[in-house]
Every structure is written in C-alpha cells, then in structure tokens.
Image 1: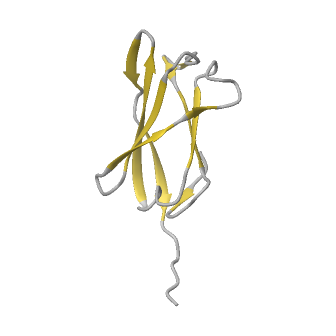
Image 2: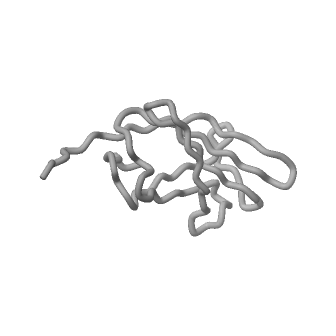
Image 3: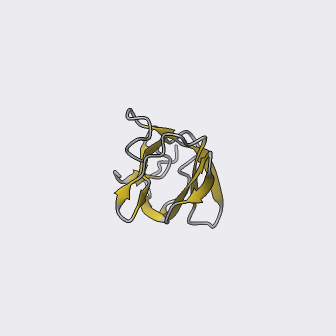
Length: 105
C-alpha cells in the first residue's frame, strides 16, 4: 500500500484475504466490510469491493473519500467477510498515515 497522507481522497486501500499465506477465493462473499481503527481509538466501517478478478484472488479494495483519513499515525485494519456458509474476520493489518503541512490563510 502506498503511503497515505492525512486528508487524502481517492487513495487505494487494498487487502488480500489469505489463510496460511495463500489467497482465498472469496468470490461468493455477500458482505465485504473494511474495518479501520484510527489512531484516536475511533473505529469506522466501509464497504469494500472486489478488484477486476472478482474475488477469486482474495483481493479487496477501498478508495478513500472526503473525511476518511482525518488522523495521522498508526491505523489498524481488519476485513469482515460474510459468505453463504459463515462469517470471518481477517488478521489485523496496519498502515501509517503521515501528517501534512496545513497553511492557514
């Protein structure tokens, strides 16, 4: 994942769902939720989507929108996958959001 900056919009957050280091076929997933824990302790949920391969490769993506990336520091993420036969959370992943220079008029 590329380095994110505070207040970024349009940045890609991409996660590969794996088990034992092998990408899982999640193409039957009915729910794909990206959960992010901000450095201030507040958690948010966003709907993730498949990449061009439709989940066969285990890849999910989310494109940030205005207001998503509002704190710099260490972020923790998980993905919730709901399939017809069960529901699972992935292992945690993390990324760092860097601060920006803000100019006051």
